[in-house]
Amino acid sequence: MNYITITYGIYLVLTLGMTVWVGRTLHKNGRIFLVDSFRGNEPLADSVNHLLVVGFYLINIGYISLAMKVGVLVESTRDVFELVSHKVGVVLLVLGAMHFFNLLIFTKMRRRAMQTPPPVPAQAKLAAAHS
Image 1 (cartoon, rainbow, N blue to C red):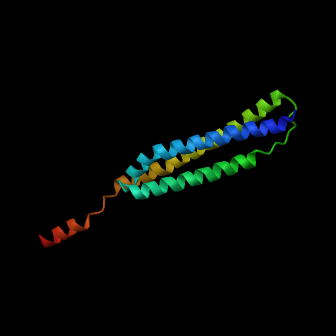
Image 2: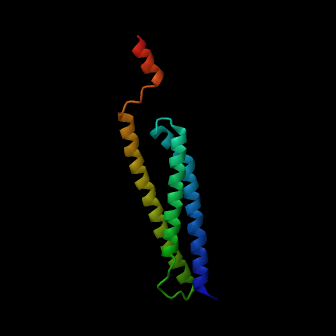
Image 3: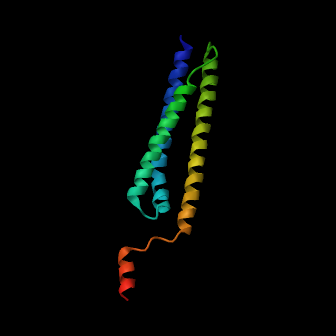
């Protein structure tokens, strides 16, 4: 039995599956937050949301690929589970750190947007000028 091949298979199935699940969850639930952050500008929020998800997938799948290399001998089922557990744990920590980093950035951005008065529509300017 080739334990390293089994290790790679389990690692890829788990980490890619979690990455897709987290990416879809963030895309779906992040839209409301982004629409609010962009003061109701849905096209801009949807565009940013899509770009964030693409970046999320690129970074995570790249990291998963780089972290796949194993520098130890995998000689037993126990070694398989210990190595997969360690590698999946690291990927989860990276996913969590990226999530909180994005939340921090967008919370700051949203706070700044809420402090800035909304733009005055052109018709309101015209009506004020004719008064």
